[in-house]
Structure formats: C-alpha cells, structure tokens
Image 1 (cartoon, one colour):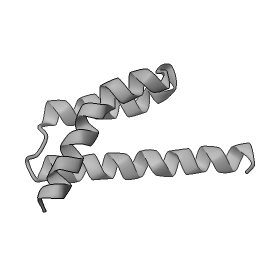
Image 2 (cartoon, rainbow, N blue to C red):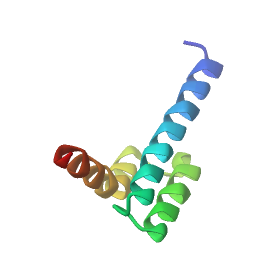
Image 3 (tube, rainbow, N blue to C red):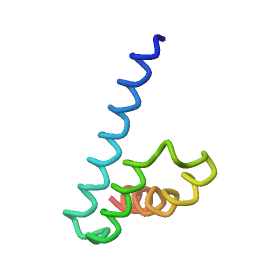
Image 4 (cartoon, helix red, strand yellow):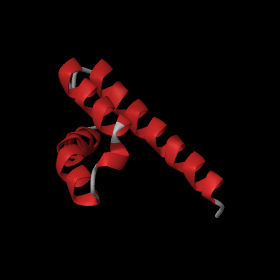
Length: 71
C-alpha cells in the first residue's frame, strides 16, 4: 500500500472512531468534556506511542464496548 493510501486509510479510521464517540456523546454515555478529550487525542495522535494511546483511549473504548454489549 502506498504512503498516500495509508494516510487516507488512517484518516478514515480516525473519522469512524470520532463518529462512534460522537454517537456515545449524543446518547449521554460520555459527556462533552470526555468527547473533547477524545478529539484532542485524535488530533495529536502522532504525538503518542501505542502504549500511551491505549492508556488514554482505552477507557473510552471500554465504555463503548460495554454499551454495545448491553444493547
């Protein structure tokens, strides 16, 4: 896969993740401050190691999974 294709795929994944978190915001599962934190992390994703991303976003991924399992 070419570098440009990888960049475009990474951007699509970011958008899908943010969209999913936005849905949780609208359902009241997360609050506005949490959503803004997620946006900040995604905007600066290249500043974090994989471990840091897992630590910072892991809480929100767990919330999303628990909500989805409850459905």
